[in-house]
Image 1 (cartoon, rainbow, N blue to C red):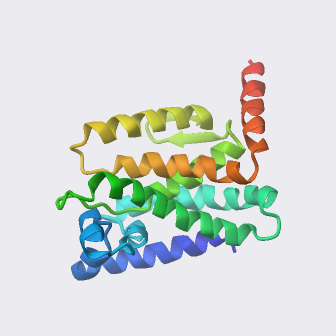
Image 2: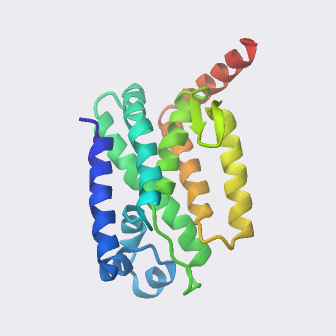
Length: 208
């Protein structure tokens, strides 16, 4: 069984538990102010296991369901001896990376908190884009799949724009840095992936 599905199942269990118990929800959510003042850095990780409602949970878990196993297969190229362990490590670190970005930005703001695995699932998606930049990524309001590298550019642009604008109660900063972490993590271990990335894009353009 892909470790992605184990993570998925665990995330669903914790999310549903927290949704049914407000005390647990408040104790586990990512709250930079409390992390800074009380030293509750465990929230950097636990906040990535919570979701605001079933729809929020469903969208993130769909991304993990479809792209997690694919990334595990890709990790065999970089980590042939322990692809499943490295995927688990990657996923945990991606939650922490996304949370640490919002911690730095909001640690003095007692009114900011966030939840969700969107930073981690964005990391999974963007790592897949590094390996397969022309992979088709579907969106509900667009009938045809978008090549991954184009989707990635649009995603990063919008996340940066929305993070600076604010006001919609969505942690776009976590989305942006989670995605960036996902793209860079495999590259650090195998820099030649970047050559393959651009080569595949050039071949895609050459096919027209």
